[in-house]
Image 1 (tube, rainbow, N blue to C red):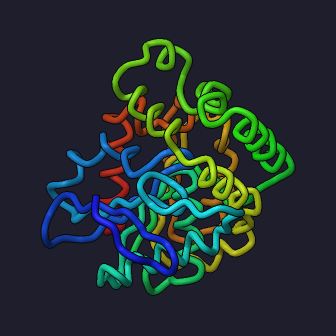
Image 2 (cartoon, rainbow, N blue to C red; image 1 turned 120 degrees about the vertical axis):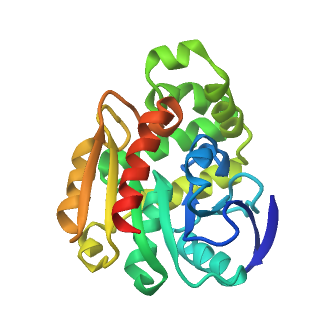
Length: 264
């Protein structure tokens, strides 16, 4: 990966796909990195110029101490685009990456050509805030390995966890190597998520991909997003939990490609 200076941090990024084509900017989930999208790249590279990056506190990007904010995540994304000379992107974000996409489309509508929001939500509630506190306590006490053990059944179905195949192990290894400062800072940011009442400001054509059995961002959260964004549609992948793009990549890729074909 290469790095670019954005404000006070160094943002790690990677290009894949076409040299010249519509730009997809893909943002990952909490505790992961650009590698969460590995199984999507081959399906997309023939049609798009793909920009993956590690957002603040994750992967190979700087992980400053202290609480982060979603506004910082949005500013970092715009700063990365500016540093790379990109005026507009088609945004694809999963979980926290979807939250960042919402913030971008609200604050910088002229920079977002289209939006695909995967397994995400628009509003933190009491349960979500408490869940953040629980995870932060575990991380502070024992680091990233115990929080993975605490949450792995939320990301994947039980049989997928039990098999521990290469795709599962890749995500696990990225998760447990996430800097503690980055995980604490990032979870503090999403605890304050409050985009629901601003979703009507989103102008970009939007597709929402939900997982039918996602305990982290239940399907009701995706329905709520869809109801508040004009020119949006919802797709549901039944029987899947939070990281459906990793567990059932072929199914996910088919839906993602269909959504992108509709809005780009």
